[in-house]
Structures are given as structure tokens and as C-alpha cells.
Length: 324
Image 1 (cartoon, helix red, strand yellow):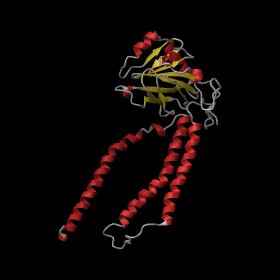
Image 2 (image 1 turned 90 degrees about the vertical axis):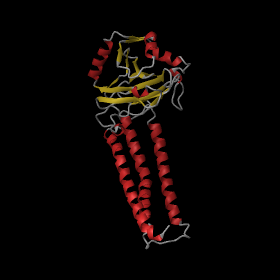
Image 3 (image 1 turned 30 degrees about the horizontal axis):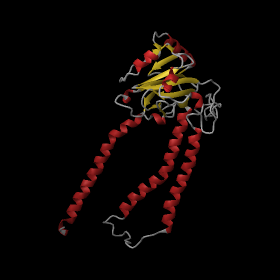
Image 4 (image 1 turned 135 degrees about the vertical axis):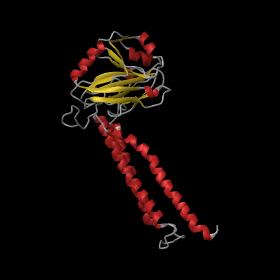
């Protein structure tokens, strides 16, 4: 390169770099518009609250490394730039015990803290553990169809398509399976995501403390219509729940084997439907269709089949029924 053209070339490159930085910032602006509805950080149940706290604590611990690294990277780039003739030039430097101790000790301590925290929270928030409460849990059987959700209330002999209703401050005990392919049941503002699989039963226990309507969805790709597998998860007062039950019982539609076969036909954007009656054992027949395991054979690690399940106590405000 001709030395006479070097300053001009550097100026052009610096201008291009500045333009690139502004372009990058402009490109990020559309992404920030989606931050106004962060459902994971707006929990409406004890499980979701504790999971949000876990996310924040883990993120904060990791930022203890990330933020200093970013700051030091920018500092080093500025301090040792080519135009800074005052910076120390040490091409033969290769080792510093103090630096090695810092860059290895701090991350190792953070990893240990994260491991202990996640180990404890994983067992404490096990979705299979029933929630301790002075209210009897509401049982709901969930079946993922292509592409819709079937909710069966066995204690009330009603069922719905793409509508989940639960009383406020009442634990909900879900049993979940799939009619055909694996899917994922998720209500972000209430808590954990659990997969549904054919020939298998998974379990989930949630509780909602604030009346409202929350977004329920399928969070796993299961075909062309999975993006339409959305449903309202409504947390209502006990009185409103009884009103809803009466509305469901006023339906003239009964859910039996023939009606289920019609529902199993793949659809996109299936409308809300209610059934005033359900054949006994319908959920179990779907599980047994692929030689699934009997319900009394499912247990937590360390439990014997048929033993009373462990309960999960939740930290909660005084106004809540779930107590630590």
C-alpha cells in the first residue's frame, strides 16, 4: 500500500464502521417493540412467580461475568488502539498468575452456586408434585389433538375444546397425553411447560391467584397447524366457575368415542366447543390406545406405585391459600 494513501484509507474505513454501528442499532429497534408483553415476567400464580425469580437470579449471576467481559473488551479495544502510542507494547508477555486466578475462580464459583440453586429448585418445583392447599384440587385431563386442545373435567362430567377454566386460588391437577404426536402444553403466566406424548401420561400442578384470562399455547412444533393451538386459560371466582359449569352443561353435545373420532381429524384454528357429558374413562382409553401405562403405575422418584403423592408447598402472600 502507498503510505501516502494510508490516512485517507483509514478515514474511509472509520466512516464505514460508524455507519455500520448505526445501521446495527437501527436494525435492533423493531425487535424491541415485542418487549411490552413479557408474559414470563408477569406471573399470575405461585409456580410462575418462583420460576420468574429463578430466571432473574440465574441471569444476574451470569451477568457478573458477561458485563465485566463486555466492559473490558471495549476498554482494551480503546486502550490499545493503533493510534495510542502511550499504550504499553509487550509482545513477549504470556502469563499472569493473578489474571489466571481471577478468570477461573469467579466463573467456577458462579457455576457452583448455579448448580446448587438449580438442583434445589428443580426438585422443589417438580411439576408432578401436588400443591399443598386447604382446597381440594380441580382435576383436568388434557389431550393434545391435531391441532387443538381437549380439556376434560372428570369430576364435573364436562369437556371443552380450546377453553380452560379454573377457580382462583384452587390447585389444578392436570393429567396430559396426546392423541397422535408429541406436543407441549404451556400457560406462561401460570407456570411450567409440560410435554404431551402418545401412550404416556405426564402431570402438571398449577394454581392461579389473580382472576383474568391468560394465553395458553402449544410451545412445540407438531405440524402445520400447531401455531393455531392457542386457548384462553381463564382464572375465575368460585361463583363464576359454577356459572361456567352450568353453561357447559347446557350444551347439547356429548363427548363419546364417535365424537372424539371426529375431533381427531386435523384442523386449523378450531373454534371453542363445550360438551355437557363425557364417556367414562375416555382419557384412559386414549392412553391405552398405544398400550400406555396405567395411572396407578406412575409415581415420583423414590415413591412406590399407588403411594400417596408428595405435596409441594409454595411461598405465598397471606391472602393466598397456598402456604409455605
